[in-house]
Length: 344
Image (cartoon, rainbow, N blue to C red):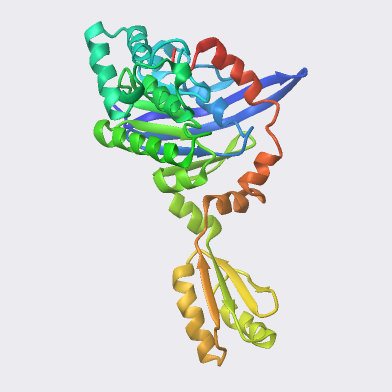
């Protein structure tokens, strides 16, 4: 037995777009341990959703393979599907059906008995706070309520592994916070492994134990958020002085304390981006004071995951998104979702 609940080896997906082969995902190789919460980040068109759809057997890889919940995605796709939950980007519920009935139908699909389906539906209605609208039709729900129903549908058969594709996109801040609390509660209560994509970098930074960054179909970083920020970005320290002359003298003093470039910022300030900013700032102030240079202002700004993406690619995630999705990613994959169904 292995502790890996996902083991991907060389997953690659090519699409034909206007008679040209375009590689949406290239040599995706990684493992996820049971119980982990992994965030998969990258701009639109990077290949994140394509990767999830391969891992959930919605589309086959062009090459490579993976074992998910102990089963090969190509040889045993039905066994994979029976043991995972998948919440895609589109609402999964049948709009005319009531929320509780939708959950019962999901239980029937997974071969659960009527009594087991009722018990599980009631558990999810309580734990995901669906009781106030359990008898409404899906089309009457707000966006946040629909996303909570989507999560409930993905969890109906109590899967050990839950895939979430942009689960909080389009939700207001309160609904996003509520949804995340539900996800964290489910992990605490059931040990569910969660693998998700998100464009909200602060979510990944706050909640994920591990962050994978994808760009142009390849994984370019894989570590904890803290280590990625420390090693690839660093704290931005800015020191202000009384004059341009003092700022000029300060550059050499601060530079002697770090191997990172110290830059002039405006007329009377200097700045440096360093992984050890908490330690560097007081050391710099002391060294400058010893050199007779008085620091008038000092600020330290911790790095973000967007700074990590900037360090890796030379552009921020927002800039990458504004560049638009590559033609290989979403349109063709969405057809796969429509044919197979996000939870069914």
